[in-house]
Amino acid sequence: MNSETKICQSCKSAFTIEPDDFAFYEKINVPPPTWCPECRNRRRMMWRNERTLHRRTCALTHKDVISCFAPDSGVMVYDRDVWWSDQWTAESFARDYDFAQPFFKQFRDLLGSVPMPAVFNGESLNSNYNNHVGWLKNCYLIFASMENENCAYGNKVQFSKDSFDTLVVSHSELCYEAVQSVKIYNCAFVNNSRECNDSMFLENCTGCSHCFGCINLRNKSYYIFNQPYSKEEYAKKIQELFDGGFVGILNVRRQLQQLKERAIYRYANIINSQNVTGDNLVHVADSRNCFDCFDNVRGCKFVVNSGAGMNDCYDSYGIGITELCYEGIDTGLESSRQRFAIVTWGGHTTAYTYACRSCSDCFACIGLRNKQYCILNKQYTKEEYEALVPRIIQHMNDMPYVDAKGRVYKYGEFFPPELSPFAYNETIAQEYFPLTKEEAQKQGYRWRDPDTKQYTVTKKPEDLPDHIKDVDDSILKETIGCMHKGECNEQCTTAFRIIPEELAFYRRMNLPLPRLCPNCRHYERLKQRNPLKLWHRACMCDGKRYPNTASHQHEGQCSNEFETSYAPERPEIIYCEQCYNAEVA
Image 1 (cartoon, rainbow, N blue to C red):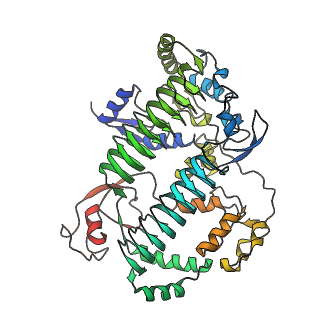
Image 2 (cartoon, rainbow, N blue to C red):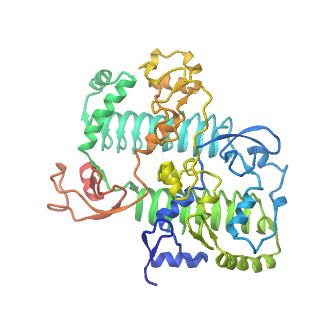
Image 3 (cartoon, rainbow, N blue to C red):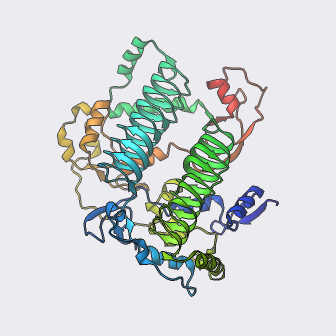
Protein backbone atom coordinates (compact mmCIF):
# COMPACT_ATOMS: atom_id res chain seq x y z
CA MET A 1 0.00 0.00 0.00
CA ASN A 2 1.27 3.47 -0.86
CA SER A 3 1.35 6.62 1.26
CA GLU A 4 -1.74 8.78 1.08
CA THR A 5 -2.08 12.53 1.63
CA LYS A 6 -5.25 13.81 3.29
CA ILE A 7 -6.62 17.19 4.35
CA CYS A 8 -7.32 17.53 8.07
CA GLN A 9 -10.97 18.09 8.94
CA SER A 10 -10.01 20.48 11.72
CA CYS A 11 -7.09 22.67 10.61
CA LYS A 12 -7.39 22.03 6.83
CA SER A 13 -3.66 21.26 6.50
CA ALA A 14 -2.30 18.29 4.57
CA PHE A 15 -0.98 15.22 6.39
CA THR A 16 0.36 11.89 5.23
CA ILE A 17 -0.71 8.39 6.18
CA GLU A 18 2.17 5.97 5.66
CA PRO A 19 1.91 2.29 4.63
CA ASP A 20 2.77 1.09 8.15
CA ASP A 21 -0.03 3.32 9.48
CA PHE A 22 -2.56 1.63 7.20
CA ALA A 23 -1.30 -1.74 8.41
CA PHE A 24 -1.87 -0.71 12.04
CA TYR A 25 -5.40 0.58 11.36
CA GLU A 26 -6.25 -2.67 9.59
CA LYS A 27 -4.84 -4.70 12.49
CA ILE A 28 -7.15 -3.03 15.02
CA ASN A 29 -10.06 -2.68 12.59
CA VAL A 30 -10.50 1.10 12.45
CA PRO A 31 -10.62 3.41 9.43
CA PRO A 32 -7.76 5.84 8.73
CA PRO A 33 -8.00 9.17 10.61
CA THR A 34 -9.51 12.31 9.11
CA TRP A 35 -7.66 14.67 11.50
CA CYS A 36 -3.92 15.36 11.31
CA PRO A 37 -1.69 14.05 14.14
CA GLU A 38 -1.44 17.42 15.92
CA CYS A 39 -5.20 18.02 15.84
CA ARG A 40 -5.84 14.46 17.02
CA ASN A 41 -3.48 15.08 19.91
CA ARG A 42 -5.22 18.33 20.83
CA ARG A 43 -8.64 16.66 20.55
CA ARG A 44 -7.65 13.92 23.02
CA MET A 45 -6.16 16.44 25.42
CA MET A 46 -9.45 18.33 25.57
CA TRP A 47 -10.85 15.33 27.40
CA ARG A 48 -8.23 15.41 30.17
CA ASN A 49 -8.30 17.93 32.98
CA GLU A 50 -5.31 17.34 35.23
CA ARG A 51 -4.89 20.50 37.28
CA THR A 52 -8.15 22.46 37.52
CA LEU A 53 -10.11 21.60 40.67
CA HIS A 54 -13.57 22.66 41.79
CA ARG A 55 -15.67 22.37 44.92
CA ARG A 56 -18.53 19.89 44.49
CA THR A 57 -20.92 17.82 46.55
CA CYS A 58 -20.98 14.04 46.39
CA ALA A 59 -24.34 13.17 44.83
CA LEU A 60 -24.71 10.11 47.08
CA THR A 61 -23.41 11.18 50.50
CA HIS A 62 -23.81 14.98 50.05
CA LYS A 63 -20.29 15.35 51.40
CA ASP A 64 -18.22 18.28 50.14
CA VAL A 65 -15.50 17.10 47.75
CA ILE A 66 -12.82 18.51 45.47
CA SER A 67 -13.40 17.50 41.86
CA CYS A 68 -11.90 17.91 38.41
CA PHE A 69 -15.46 18.19 37.07
CA ALA A 70 -16.95 21.69 37.39
CA PRO A 71 -20.46 22.10 38.81
CA ASP A 72 -21.79 23.01 35.36
CA SER A 73 -19.93 20.21 33.54
CA GLY A 74 -23.04 18.10 33.20
CA VAL A 75 -21.34 15.29 35.14
CA MET A 76 -22.49 13.96 38.50
CA VAL A 77 -19.67 13.10 40.91
CA TYR A 78 -19.23 10.74 43.84
CA ASP A 79 -16.57 10.97 46.48
CA ARG A 80 -13.63 8.96 45.24
CA ASP A 81 -13.93 6.25 47.92
CA VAL A 82 -17.70 6.04 47.45
CA TRP A 83 -17.28 5.65 43.71
CA TRP A 84 -15.01 2.65 44.21
CA SER A 85 -17.31 1.11 46.84
CA ASP A 86 -20.20 -1.32 46.34
CA GLN A 87 -22.81 1.30 47.27
CA TRP A 88 -23.82 1.68 43.62
CA THR A 89 -23.46 0.00 40.23
CA ALA A 90 -22.82 1.59 36.86
CA GLU A 91 -24.98 -1.01 35.11
CA SER A 92 -28.03 0.44 36.86
CA PHE A 93 -27.74 3.33 34.38
CA ALA A 94 -27.90 1.02 31.35
CA ARG A 95 -29.94 1.98 28.31
CA ASP A 96 -30.86 0.64 24.91
CA TYR A 97 -29.11 1.87 21.82
CA ASP A 98 -31.23 4.37 19.91
CA PHE A 99 -30.81 4.19 16.14
CA ALA A 100 -32.68 7.49 15.79
CA GLN A 101 -29.87 9.50 17.41
CA PRO A 102 -26.16 9.94 16.61
CA PHE A 103 -23.90 7.68 18.63
CA PHE A 104 -21.84 10.44 20.27
CA LYS A 105 -24.96 12.21 21.55
CA GLN A 106 -26.07 8.99 23.23
CA PHE A 107 -22.66 8.54 24.80
CA ARG A 108 -22.69 12.10 26.18
CA ASP A 109 -26.17 11.54 27.60
CA LEU A 110 -24.87 8.44 29.38
CA LEU A 111 -21.91 10.43 30.70
CA GLY A 112 -24.39 12.88 32.19
CA SER A 113 -26.11 10.15 34.19
CA VAL A 114 -23.37 7.75 35.34
CA PRO A 115 -21.52 9.14 38.39
CA MET A 116 -17.82 9.81 37.98
CA PRO A 117 -15.17 9.82 40.73
CA ALA A 118 -14.63 13.37 41.95
CA VAL A 119 -10.91 12.96 41.20
CA PHE A 120 -8.82 10.15 39.77
CA ASN A 121 -6.72 9.44 42.84
CA GLY A 122 -5.76 5.85 43.50
CA GLU A 123 -4.45 4.34 46.75
CA SER A 124 -3.09 7.53 48.26
CA LEU A 125 -2.64 8.57 51.89
CA ASN A 126 -3.23 12.10 53.16
CA SER A 127 -3.21 13.38 49.59
CA ASN A 128 -6.62 14.80 48.77
CA TYR A 129 -5.92 17.76 46.48
CA ASN A 130 -4.43 15.74 43.65
CA ASN A 131 -5.72 14.31 40.38
CA HIS A 132 -4.76 11.53 37.97
CA VAL A 133 -2.37 10.12 40.56
CA GLY A 134 -1.63 6.90 42.38
CA TRP A 135 0.27 5.75 45.46
CA LEU A 136 0.95 9.17 46.97
CA LYS A 137 1.70 9.95 50.61
CA ASN A 138 1.45 13.42 52.15
CA CYS A 139 1.24 15.20 48.79
CA TYR A 140 -0.51 18.40 47.78
CA LEU A 141 -1.44 19.66 44.32
CA ILE A 142 0.38 16.88 42.54
CA PHE A 143 -1.01 15.85 39.15
CA ALA A 144 -0.50 13.06 36.62
CA SER A 145 2.01 11.43 38.96
CA MET A 146 2.66 8.27 40.94
CA GLU A 147 4.72 6.87 43.83
CA ASN A 148 5.65 10.13 45.57
CA GLU A 149 5.97 11.22 49.20
CA ASN A 150 5.99 14.67 50.82
CA CYS A 151 5.76 16.49 47.48
CA ALA A 152 3.74 19.50 46.32
CA TYR A 153 3.08 21.54 43.18
CA GLY A 154 4.30 18.88 40.79
CA ASN A 155 3.23 17.44 37.46
CA LYS A 156 4.34 14.14 35.93
CA VAL A 157 6.47 13.28 38.96
CA GLN A 158 7.37 9.70 39.80
CA PHE A 159 9.19 7.88 42.61
CA SER A 160 10.26 11.12 44.32
CA LYS A 161 10.37 12.52 47.85
CA ASP A 162 10.48 15.88 49.59
CA SER A 163 10.30 17.92 46.39
CA PHE A 164 8.33 21.02 45.41
CA ASP A 165 7.58 22.69 42.08
CA THR A 166 8.70 19.98 39.70
CA LEU A 167 7.74 18.91 36.17
CA VAL A 168 8.61 15.58 34.54
CA VAL A 169 10.93 14.47 37.35
CA SER A 170 11.53 10.94 38.58
CA HIS A 171 13.55 9.04 41.20
CA SER A 172 14.60 12.28 42.89
CA GLU A 173 14.71 13.79 46.37
CA LEU A 174 15.00 17.27 47.84
CA CYS A 175 14.38 19.05 44.56
CA TYR A 176 12.96 22.46 43.79
CA GLU A 177 12.06 23.97 40.42
CA ALA A 178 13.32 20.91 38.57
CA VAL A 179 12.21 20.16 35.01
CA GLN A 180 12.67 17.04 32.93
CA SER A 181 15.28 15.50 35.22
CA VAL A 182 16.02 12.05 36.63
CA LYS A 183 17.83 10.87 39.76
CA ILE A 184 18.73 14.24 41.19
CA TYR A 185 19.28 14.96 44.89
CA ASN A 186 19.38 18.24 46.80
CA CYS A 187 19.13 20.34 43.66
CA ALA A 188 17.27 23.51 42.69
CA PHE A 189 16.59 25.19 39.34
CA VAL A 190 17.64 22.17 37.28
CA ASN A 191 16.54 21.43 33.73
CA ASN A 192 17.08 18.33 31.60
CA SER A 193 19.70 16.80 33.88
CA ARG A 194 20.42 13.33 35.25
CA GLU A 195 22.18 11.84 38.26
CA CYS A 196 23.24 15.17 39.77
CA ASN A 197 23.41 16.17 43.41
CA ASP A 198 24.05 19.20 45.62
CA SER A 199 23.81 21.58 42.69
CA MET A 200 21.84 24.61 41.47
CA PHE A 201 21.04 26.21 38.13
CA LEU A 202 21.96 23.33 35.84
CA GLU A 203 21.05 22.78 32.19
CA ASN A 204 21.74 19.55 30.27
CA CYS A 205 24.12 18.13 32.87
CA THR A 206 24.78 14.49 33.80
CA GLY A 207 26.62 12.98 36.77
CA CYS A 208 27.53 16.33 38.32
CA SER A 209 27.87 17.25 41.97
CA HIS A 210 28.47 20.60 43.63
CA CYS A 211 28.00 22.51 40.39
CA PHE A 212 26.41 25.93 40.02
CA GLY A 213 25.18 27.75 36.92
CA CYS A 214 26.45 25.14 34.47
CA ILE A 215 25.41 23.73 31.11
CA ASN A 216 26.46 20.64 29.15
CA LEU A 217 28.74 19.21 31.84
CA ARG A 218 29.42 15.50 32.31
CA ASN A 219 30.69 13.96 35.55
CA LYS A 220 32.11 17.19 36.97
CA SER A 221 32.38 18.53 40.52
CA TYR A 222 32.97 22.02 41.88
CA TYR A 223 32.21 23.97 38.71
CA ILE A 224 30.69 27.46 38.56
CA PHE A 225 29.43 28.77 35.22
CA ASN A 226 31.37 25.91 33.57
CA GLN A 227 34.67 26.90 35.20
CA PRO A 228 36.48 24.51 37.61
CA TYR A 229 37.28 25.44 41.22
CA SER A 230 38.85 23.67 44.14
CA LYS A 231 36.48 22.53 46.87
CA GLU A 232 37.52 25.44 49.09
CA GLU A 233 37.36 28.01 46.28
CA TYR A 234 33.93 26.69 45.27
CA ALA A 235 32.41 27.21 48.71
CA LYS A 236 33.82 30.73 48.96
CA LYS A 237 32.70 31.72 45.48
CA ILE A 238 29.16 30.41 46.02
CA GLN A 239 28.79 32.61 49.09
CA GLU A 240 29.76 35.60 46.98
CA LEU A 241 27.39 34.72 44.13
CA PHE A 242 24.27 33.58 45.92
CA ASP A 243 23.00 34.07 49.45
CA GLY A 244 19.65 32.32 48.90
CA GLY A 245 17.69 35.52 48.25
CA PHE A 246 15.09 36.15 45.55
CA VAL A 247 17.13 38.93 43.92
CA GLY A 248 20.11 36.59 43.85
CA ILE A 249 18.10 34.04 41.87
CA LEU A 250 17.30 36.66 39.24
CA ASN A 251 20.95 37.66 38.97
CA VAL A 252 22.17 34.08 38.58
CA ARG A 253 19.55 33.35 35.93
CA ARG A 254 20.72 36.33 33.90
CA GLN A 255 24.30 35.09 34.00
CA LEU A 256 23.25 31.54 33.12
CA GLN A 257 21.22 32.83 30.18
CA GLN A 258 24.35 34.42 28.74
CA LEU A 259 26.11 31.06 29.00
CA LYS A 260 23.17 29.26 27.37
CA GLU A 261 23.17 31.64 24.41
CA ARG A 262 26.70 30.51 23.53
CA ALA A 263 26.05 26.78 24.12
CA ILE A 264 25.18 23.92 21.79
CA TYR A 265 22.11 21.72 22.13
CA ARG A 266 21.59 18.11 21.18
CA TYR A 267 18.83 17.71 18.57
CA ALA A 268 16.79 15.49 20.91
CA ASN A 269 16.97 13.84 24.32
CA ILE A 270 17.03 10.21 23.24
CA ILE A 271 18.69 7.63 25.52
CA ASN A 272 19.20 3.91 24.91
CA SER A 273 16.75 3.98 22.02
CA GLN A 274 16.93 2.76 18.43
CA ASN A 275 15.13 3.74 15.25
CA VAL A 276 13.02 6.46 16.82
CA THR A 277 11.94 10.06 16.28
CA GLY A 278 10.60 12.40 18.93
CA ASP A 279 12.00 13.82 22.15
CA ASN A 280 12.62 12.73 25.73
CA LEU A 281 12.73 9.03 24.94
CA VAL A 282 14.37 6.38 27.13
CA HIS A 283 14.43 2.68 26.18
CA VAL A 284 12.22 3.15 23.13
CA ALA A 285 12.54 1.29 19.83
CA ASP A 286 11.00 1.41 16.35
CA SER A 287 8.70 4.31 17.21
CA ARG A 288 7.88 7.60 15.50
CA ASN A 289 6.76 11.02 16.66
CA CYS A 290 6.72 10.08 20.34
CA PHE A 291 7.42 12.34 23.32
CA ASP A 292 8.11 11.68 26.99
CA CYS A 293 8.12 7.90 26.60
CA PHE A 294 10.18 5.46 28.63
CA ASP A 295 10.77 1.88 29.71
CA ASN A 296 10.32 -0.64 26.92
CA VAL A 297 8.19 1.13 24.33
CA ARG A 298 8.15 -0.50 20.89
CA GLY A 299 6.34 0.01 17.60
CA CYS A 300 4.46 3.12 18.70
CA LYS A 301 3.54 6.37 16.95
CA PHE A 302 2.08 9.73 18.03
CA VAL A 303 2.29 8.77 21.72
CA VAL A 304 2.93 11.24 24.57
CA ASN A 305 3.78 10.78 28.26
CA SER A 306 3.59 7.00 28.19
CA GLY A 307 5.62 3.89 28.80
CA ALA A 308 6.20 0.92 31.07
CA GLY A 309 5.82 -1.79 28.46
CA MET A 310 3.94 -0.72 25.35
CA ASN A 311 3.73 -2.36 21.96
CA ASP A 312 2.00 -1.24 18.76
CA CYS A 313 0.13 1.75 20.17
CA TYR A 314 -0.90 4.89 18.27
CA ASP A 315 -2.29 8.28 19.22
CA SER A 316 -2.35 8.13 23.00
CA TYR A 317 -1.48 10.11 26.13
CA GLY A 318 -0.63 8.70 29.54
CA ILE A 319 -0.87 5.00 28.70
CA GLY A 320 1.26 1.98 29.66
CA ILE A 321 1.49 -1.80 30.02
CA THR A 322 -0.64 -2.29 26.93
CA GLU A 323 -0.58 -3.24 23.28
CA LEU A 324 -2.64 -2.33 20.24
CA CYS A 325 -4.09 0.72 21.95
CA TYR A 326 -5.45 3.52 19.73
CA GLU A 327 -6.70 6.99 20.70
CA GLY A 328 -6.41 6.48 24.46
CA ILE A 329 -5.96 8.68 27.53
CA ASP A 330 -4.79 7.32 30.90
CA THR A 331 -5.38 3.80 29.66
CA GLY A 332 -3.70 0.40 29.77
CA LEU A 333 -2.51 -1.64 32.74
CA GLU A 334 -2.29 -5.16 31.30
CA SER A 335 -4.68 -4.55 28.44
CA SER A 336 -4.92 -4.89 24.69
CA ARG A 337 -6.99 -3.60 21.77
CA GLN A 338 -8.44 -0.65 23.67
CA ARG A 339 -9.75 1.93 21.21
CA PHE A 340 -11.04 5.40 22.05
CA ALA A 341 -10.64 4.92 25.80
CA ILE A 342 -10.43 7.42 28.66
CA VAL A 343 -9.22 6.24 32.09
CA THR A 344 -9.86 2.63 31.16
CA TRP A 345 -7.61 0.14 32.93
CA GLY A 346 -7.25 -3.57 32.26
CA GLY A 347 -9.44 -5.49 29.87
CA HIS A 348 -9.37 -6.21 26.19
CA THR A 349 -11.15 -5.39 22.95
CA THR A 350 -13.09 -2.32 24.04
CA ALA A 351 -14.18 0.79 22.18
CA TYR A 352 -15.45 4.19 23.37
CA THR A 353 -15.13 3.65 27.12
CA TYR A 354 -14.70 6.04 30.04
CA ALA A 355 -13.64 5.11 33.60
CA CYS A 356 -14.01 1.37 33.07
CA ARG A 357 -11.93 -1.25 34.88
CA SER A 358 -11.12 -4.83 33.80
CA CYS A 359 -13.80 -4.95 31.10
CA SER A 360 -13.60 -6.85 27.83
CA ASP A 361 -15.71 -6.75 24.68
CA CYS A 362 -17.53 -3.60 25.77
CA PHE A 363 -18.67 -0.77 23.51
CA ALA A 364 -19.71 2.73 24.61
CA CYS A 365 -19.63 2.05 28.35
CA ILE A 366 -18.92 4.25 31.38
CA GLY A 367 -17.92 3.29 34.91
CA LEU A 368 -18.23 -0.49 34.51
CA ARG A 369 -16.04 -2.97 36.35
CA ASN A 370 -15.33 -6.60 35.45
CA LYS A 371 -17.97 -6.70 32.72
CA GLN A 372 -18.13 -8.26 29.27
CA TYR A 373 -20.45 -7.86 26.28
CA CYS A 374 -21.98 -4.55 27.34
CA ILE A 375 -23.18 -1.62 25.20
CA LEU A 376 -24.21 1.67 26.83
CA ASN A 377 -23.77 -0.21 30.13
CA LYS A 378 -26.44 -2.76 29.17
CA GLN A 379 -25.60 -6.45 29.43
CA TYR A 380 -25.95 -8.63 26.32
CA THR A 381 -25.13 -12.21 25.50
CA LYS A 382 -22.04 -12.86 23.40
CA GLU A 383 -24.17 -13.54 20.35
CA GLU A 384 -26.31 -10.43 20.86
CA TYR A 385 -23.24 -8.25 21.39
CA GLU A 386 -21.44 -9.50 18.32
CA ALA A 387 -24.52 -8.92 16.19
CA LEU A 388 -25.31 -5.44 17.55
CA VAL A 389 -21.84 -3.82 17.46
CA PRO A 390 -21.51 -3.99 13.64
CA ARG A 391 -24.97 -2.44 13.32
CA ILE A 392 -23.94 0.42 15.63
CA ILE A 393 -20.73 1.00 13.67
CA GLN A 394 -22.73 1.16 10.44
CA HIS A 395 -25.16 3.56 12.13
CA MET A 396 -22.27 5.77 13.21
CA ASN A 397 -21.28 6.04 9.57
CA ASP A 398 -24.81 6.49 8.25
CA MET A 399 -25.83 9.05 10.91
CA PRO A 400 -22.57 10.71 12.02
CA TYR A 401 -22.36 13.35 14.70
CA VAL A 402 -21.67 16.81 13.26
CA ASP A 403 -20.31 19.50 15.58
CA ALA A 404 -20.95 23.23 15.50
CA LYS A 405 -18.00 23.79 13.15
CA GLY A 406 -19.23 21.20 10.65
CA ARG A 407 -16.68 18.53 11.58
CA VAL A 408 -18.04 15.03 10.98
CA TYR A 409 -17.54 12.19 13.48
CA LYS A 410 -18.07 8.71 12.13
CA TYR A 411 -16.80 5.44 13.57
CA GLY A 412 -13.06 5.74 14.10
CA GLU A 413 -13.08 9.32 15.41
CA PHE A 414 -12.27 10.15 19.02
CA PHE A 415 -14.92 11.90 21.13
CA PRO A 416 -15.89 15.38 19.82
CA PRO A 417 -14.30 18.21 21.85
CA GLU A 418 -17.59 20.08 22.19
CA LEU A 419 -18.97 17.13 24.17
CA SER A 420 -16.10 17.13 26.66
CA PRO A 421 -17.13 17.90 30.25
CA PHE A 422 -14.15 20.26 30.42
CA ALA A 423 -13.57 23.72 28.96
CA TYR A 424 -10.52 24.07 26.73
CA ASN A 425 -8.54 26.09 29.27
CA GLU A 426 -9.23 23.54 32.01
CA THR A 427 -7.45 20.82 30.08
CA ILE A 428 -3.90 19.93 29.18
CA ALA A 429 -4.65 21.12 25.64
CA GLN A 430 -4.17 24.65 26.97
CA GLU A 431 -0.75 23.67 28.31
CA TYR A 432 0.56 22.08 25.12
CA PHE A 433 -1.42 24.12 22.57
CA PRO A 434 -2.23 27.42 24.34
CA LEU A 435 -5.02 29.59 22.96
CA THR A 436 -6.63 32.83 24.01
CA LYS A 437 -10.31 32.80 24.87
CA GLU A 438 -11.16 34.33 21.50
CA GLU A 439 -9.06 31.79 19.59
CA ALA A 440 -10.57 28.84 21.45
CA GLN A 441 -14.15 29.99 20.91
CA LYS A 442 -13.48 30.68 17.23
CA GLN A 443 -12.38 27.06 16.85
CA GLY A 444 -15.57 25.85 18.53
CA TYR A 445 -14.14 25.08 21.97
CA ARG A 446 -15.67 26.07 25.30
CA TRP A 447 -13.81 28.44 27.62
CA ARG A 448 -14.21 28.83 31.37
CA ASP A 449 -13.79 32.29 32.85
CA PRO A 450 -12.20 32.25 36.31
CA ASP A 451 -14.53 32.21 39.29
CA THR A 452 -14.93 35.45 41.16
CA LYS A 453 -12.38 35.47 43.98
CA GLN A 454 -13.71 36.06 47.48
CA TYR A 455 -10.35 36.59 49.19
CA THR A 456 -8.36 39.75 49.86
CA VAL A 457 -4.65 39.97 49.21
CA THR A 458 -2.91 40.74 52.52
CA LYS A 459 0.69 40.64 51.26
CA LYS A 460 1.89 42.01 47.95
CA PRO A 461 4.67 39.96 46.29
CA GLU A 462 6.98 42.98 46.21
CA ASP A 463 6.63 43.25 49.99
CA LEU A 464 7.87 39.73 50.70
CA PRO A 465 11.28 39.43 52.41
CA ASP A 466 14.11 38.73 50.00
CA HIS A 467 15.52 35.94 52.16
CA ILE A 468 13.78 33.04 53.91
CA LYS A 469 15.65 33.77 57.16
CA ASP A 470 13.56 36.93 57.47
CA VAL A 471 10.24 35.05 57.15
CA ASP A 472 8.43 34.04 60.32
CA ASP A 473 5.45 31.71 60.77
CA SER A 474 2.96 34.56 60.40
CA ILE A 475 3.38 34.19 56.62
CA LEU A 476 1.14 31.12 56.87
CA LYS A 477 -1.80 33.43 57.62
CA GLU A 478 -1.15 35.76 54.68
CA THR A 479 -2.83 35.76 51.28
CA ILE A 480 -0.01 36.60 48.88
CA GLY A 481 -0.70 38.31 45.58
CA CYS A 482 0.66 36.73 42.40
CA MET A 483 3.02 38.93 40.40
CA HIS A 484 1.01 38.21 37.23
CA LYS A 485 -2.15 39.67 38.82
CA GLY A 486 -4.33 37.55 36.55
CA GLU A 487 -3.08 39.39 33.47
CA CYS A 488 -1.46 36.31 31.87
CA ASN A 489 -2.98 33.36 29.99
CA GLU A 490 -1.78 30.83 32.55
CA GLN A 491 -4.82 30.13 34.75
CA CYS A 492 -3.47 32.63 37.28
CA THR A 493 -5.27 32.43 40.63
CA THR A 494 -4.14 36.04 41.38
CA ALA A 495 -3.20 35.01 44.95
CA PHE A 496 -1.96 32.03 46.93
CA ARG A 497 -1.11 30.76 50.41
CA ILE A 498 2.00 29.13 51.84
CA ILE A 499 1.34 25.80 53.54
CA PRO A 500 3.38 24.74 56.63
CA GLU A 501 5.19 21.91 54.82
CA GLU A 502 6.18 24.33 52.10
CA LEU A 503 7.61 26.88 54.52
CA ALA A 504 9.63 24.14 56.25
CA PHE A 505 10.95 23.04 52.85
CA TYR A 506 12.11 26.57 51.89
CA ARG A 507 13.90 26.91 55.23
CA ARG A 508 15.58 23.54 54.82
CA MET A 509 16.73 24.35 51.27
CA ASN A 510 17.55 28.03 52.02
CA LEU A 511 15.20 29.23 49.28
CA PRO A 512 13.09 32.41 49.14
CA LEU A 513 9.31 32.49 48.99
CA PRO A 514 7.84 32.34 45.47
CA ARG A 515 6.29 35.43 43.90
CA LEU A 516 3.97 33.58 41.53
CA CYS A 517 0.92 31.45 42.26
CA PRO A 518 1.26 27.66 41.71
CA ASN A 519 -0.46 27.81 38.32
CA CYS A 520 1.84 30.52 36.98
CA ARG A 521 4.88 28.69 38.35
CA HIS A 522 3.71 25.58 36.51
CA TYR A 523 3.44 27.47 33.23
CA GLU A 524 6.90 28.95 33.75
CA ARG A 525 8.24 25.41 33.96
CA LEU A 526 6.32 24.41 30.85
CA LYS A 527 8.10 27.17 28.94
CA GLN A 528 11.41 25.42 29.59
CA ARG A 529 10.29 22.45 27.49
CA ASN A 530 10.06 22.08 23.74
CA PRO A 531 6.74 21.61 21.92
CA LEU A 532 5.26 18.26 20.91
CA LYS A 533 6.24 18.84 17.32
CA LEU A 534 9.10 17.89 15.02
CA TRP A 535 10.93 19.78 12.27
CA HIS A 536 13.34 18.31 9.74
CA ARG A 537 16.66 20.10 10.13
CA ALA A 538 20.38 19.79 9.44
CA CYS A 539 23.18 19.77 11.99
CA MET A 540 24.52 23.30 12.59
CA CYS A 541 28.06 22.13 13.32
CA ASP A 542 30.40 24.04 11.01
CA GLY A 543 33.17 25.22 13.37
CA LYS A 544 32.00 28.83 13.05
CA ARG A 545 28.80 29.36 15.00
CA TYR A 546 30.32 27.43 17.90
CA PRO A 547 34.11 27.08 18.37
CA ASN A 548 34.49 23.30 18.54
CA THR A 549 37.14 22.00 20.92
CA ALA A 550 37.30 18.40 19.70
CA SER A 551 37.87 16.64 16.38
CA HIS A 552 34.77 15.68 14.39
CA GLN A 553 34.10 13.07 11.72
CA HIS A 554 33.52 15.70 9.06
CA GLU A 555 35.19 18.71 7.52
CA GLY A 556 33.34 21.97 7.16
CA GLN A 557 29.55 21.73 7.53
CA CYS A 558 28.21 18.49 9.05
CA SER A 559 25.89 16.70 6.60
CA ASN A 560 23.73 14.91 9.18
CA GLU A 561 19.99 15.60 9.19
CA PHE A 562 17.37 14.75 11.79
CA GLU A 563 13.92 15.36 13.23
CA THR A 564 14.01 17.79 16.14
CA SER A 565 11.62 19.65 18.43
CA TYR A 566 13.71 22.82 17.99
CA ALA A 567 11.93 24.98 15.42
CA PRO A 568 14.17 26.44 12.66
CA GLU A 569 13.56 30.02 13.78
CA ARG A 570 14.82 29.38 17.30
CA PRO A 571 18.23 30.83 18.27
CA GLU A 572 19.81 27.70 19.75
CA ILE A 573 22.76 26.03 17.99
CA ILE A 574 21.53 22.49 17.30
CA TYR A 575 23.97 19.61 16.83
CA CYS A 576 23.43 16.04 15.74
CA GLU A 577 24.17 13.22 18.19
CA GLN A 578 27.72 12.61 16.94
CA CYS A 579 28.79 16.25 16.95
CA TYR A 580 27.18 16.94 20.32
CA ASN A 581 28.87 13.95 21.92
CA ALA A 582 32.23 14.94 20.46
CA GLU A 583 31.99 18.28 22.27
CA VAL A 584 30.21 17.30 25.48
CA ALA A 585 30.41 13.62 26.34
